[in-house]
Image 1 (cartoon, rainbow, N blue to C red):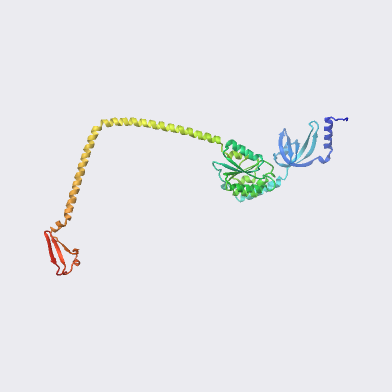
Image 2 (cartoon, rainbow, N blue to C red):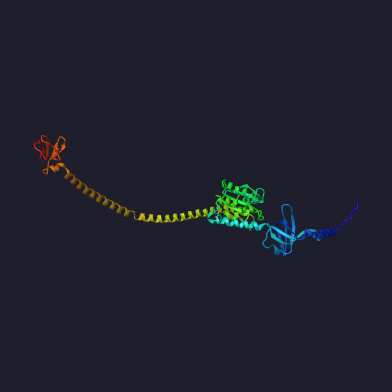
Length: 392
C-alpha cells in the first residue's frame, strides 16, 4: 500500500483554515469555570472548564479580568483559533462577564441583611473558643481533600486530639439540608467544637452555605462552631453566624489543635523555673539559718555571762511575789472568818434574840401557830417550853 503523506505544516494550515472559515464559531459565548489564571505582560492565560472538559483560553487584554478570580463561573465571548506554529487550539477571548452570580449575589445580600436584623450575627451571641480541646467534630465531604488536610494538621500539631467526621454533600441539591442536620447531630454528640469545612469554589458551589437553614442551625448550635468554607477571600453566610471564621480548613485545624511541642516546651520551662525556685528557697533558708545560728551563739554567750544575776533576781522576785500572795490570802481568810462569826445563830442569840419552833418548824409569823400549840423558845443559854394561850 502506498501513501501520499502531507507535512505537519500542511495539516496544521488546513486545520487553521477550517476554523477560520467556520463563521458559526466566530464570536460565540461559552460558559464555564475560570481556572489557572495568569497574567503575562498584559496577556491573560487561563482555562475554562466544566465537569467534562477544559478549554485553553487567551485574552490579549488582561484588564478585562479585573474583579474575577479562579473558581468564578463566567461567560466568555471569542473565537477559537488554531496556531500552526505551536500546533495548539486556543479560544481567543474578547470579553468576559460573571455567569449567574448577579442573581446569587443579590440573594446573598438579601439573606444577609434579613439575618443580621434578626440578630444572627450579634457578637454577644458568639461563644469563646474552649480550652483543652480533645475532640473535634467536622462537617465536610468524606472523599475530599479537606478532611485529610485537617487530619494532617492535627497529626503534626497534636495527635492526641480525636477527629469525628460527619460526611455530607458540600454542593448540589440537598446539600444544605445535610449540612444543617450534621450540625444538629454533632451538637448532641461528644465533641468539644464543630468545624464546617469545604474547599474553594464558585459562588454556585458555595451556595449551600448561603442558605437560611444552615444559618439557623449554626446560630442555634450550643457548642462552639467554626466555619472554614472556601478560600480566604470567600465569604458565606455561615461565616457571619459562626462563633469564629477560619480562612481555610487547614487554618481551622491550626487554630483548634494546640501544638503539643509548645506545651512540652512550656512544661519544661515550668520545671526549670521550679528547680531554680527550690534552689533559691533552700539557699535563702540556709543563709537565714546561718544568721540565726550566729545570733543564737551570741545570745547564749550573753546568757551565760548574766545567768547568776538573772537567777538571783528571779528568786528574789519569786519570794516577794509568794509572800505578797500569802499575805493577801490571809487577809481574805480573816475577813471571811469574821463574816461567818456574825452569821452564827448562837452569836445572834447572845444579843438577846430568840427563836421559836413548833413541831412543824420555825415560827416566822403569828399565822404559824394557834391557841393551844406547844412551842419551844430558844435563848442563848437554853430552851423554854410553852403553850400558846392567845394569838393577837
